[in-house]
Image (cartoon, rainbow, N blue to C red; front, top):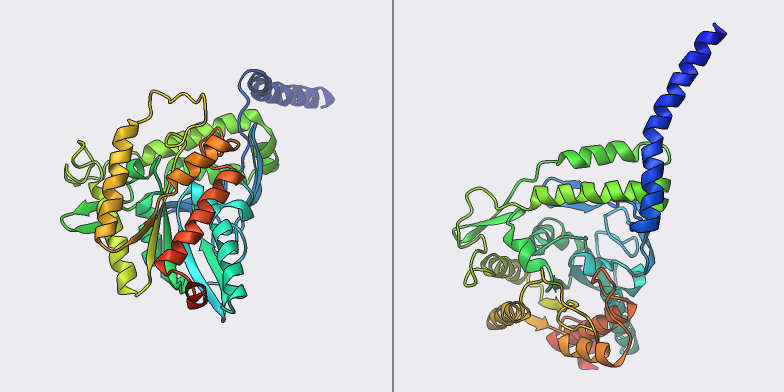
Length: 377
């Protein structure tokens, strides 16, 4: 009997060694030659948006540049716990956006929506006005399509007095052109159903394993696998929806912004119908205001082409009476005279968020998207 137990334990040990040894070797190799960013998963599958922040998620993201704590409240928002209904004596602005709005790479109170909120709240109270609150609904890797759907399905439930939409120059055009969230059918926008990707099922299983969160925050090998799994999920969404016409798919320079323009029109229409003012913030990218010595990667689109698309979209919004702000001159000047305002992953640093947040606050005042006390003051 004792001999049999020894044989069983030996076999189990051999199997465990066979499974763990490659992971240990991979861990050592990655730490030496290719360190990986460490992160927990804070998102979950959603049948309409594709994914969203997971309520109650908490953990840390760590790269060579920063260590960022993330807490998601019960409504799937970062920064602080908010109520769905607007508190009495509060002027509320709904902030939409992607990872730039989310504040990836910085503390929750350092993102540009938080910076703008502090500036507006201070001015309002000094003028005898109400508390100003910006509800930040940013979600990493969202495009304008998800933001539009969120606004119509959940956003107005926060009873906003104004809406601010952060449009990321670097990727929102491309995200919208994939048409994996909404597609244009004639003059209408139709949601594209989002079936649960197999990667999400595996993710849920992994999160139930003991110690997974610890290894996600500390292991290069686990994050190497996690990053590749996320890339597989991204490919799941990188498709043109069946039945989308050629004009809507974004093919060719004349049509490259058609779907984005249509989504913006829909956002304008729904905010106007709700009698809520709208302001669109165009967030510059690293390519638009590079630091000295920065070399543009060959895979990036032409800077002139991107500038043309932005100019045309701003002109279109102006023609609709939608307020816009594009703090490119301010960020370029700050990048020229001060320290770096972009991280290696091209998100804004604390100082970059400060420049954009202050520009946003000033634009909201100019557009009248503030309490009357501020406008009069």
